[in-house]
Amino acid sequence: MLHEPLGVDIIEPPILFALQREGIKIVDGQQLMSDARVIKTRDEIALLNTSAMMVDAAYDELYRAMKPGMRENEAVGLVSKVLYDLGSEYVEAVNAISGERCNPHPHVFSDRVLRPGDPVYYDILHSYMGYRTCYYRCFTIGYASHAMIDAYKRCREYLDAAISLVRPGRTTGEIAALWPKAQEFGFPNEEAAFALQYGHGIGLAIWEKPVISRLVSLDHPYEIKPGMVFALETFWPSTDGWAAARIEEEIVVTETGHEVITRFPAEQLMVAGAHYFTVNGPLSATRESEAAPSKRVKEMVEASAKIERVGATD
Image (tube, rainbow, N blue to C red):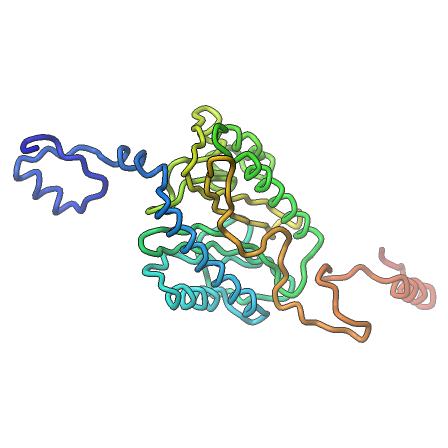
């Protein structure tokens, strides 16, 4: 109606000023639109599924390509090409984080080169007909240390526990309560650890309602309803002090439960580029970069110390 307030979600300043010069009162319409987008239609869910499918394909190509010598920025280029070839209109970001960059967690890529034994995780964010993805996967290159395997297992358990509660009638507070406190994984408070153990709606924007976090959800729980689509993402640092695991799944809330629409395998830690062979057969994908001395090596050290009359080290 003429002369009534005009609610606006997002606006460019020149347009805002032009409307105000015409005497139109602009009011905040963002919260209204945000609430309206919480429940997705069948068509919206189909588009979100298609958008996730494109990332499934990108991860498949990336998994086949990763090897020592590949750079993080090369991985970003490969993923972007796959997405655009499949019809993405906008690749918003491909976070590529490897090696010592994994902990603490940045949200950018670099030109760091992948090396044997490296952990590496990615977050792929793109848009298909306006509908987004936020989709982490974690790998190791060539082989994985026991510490990294343990970190991945812990990360996956927190994620699976959260997914198990996704169904109508549950609340975001119940999910957040499952996740570890910030101090349990190296942060002083929940604000410092925000978005590491996290959930968020996904649709026309990367982050929509509901938000799931220990920072807000325990005091302000939000009821889970059919038609919601949100992502759940967890993080866990390795005991070696520099590696870490990061996993994310996108979930549709159904009338009776939920459906996970991110389908690239993530039940266990995936090893890329594992093609090493020894005289005894394939090299184990579970190993340390520096192996413990064998019994024979210890005997050699001890014998040398006795012969040369020098102290043997432990």
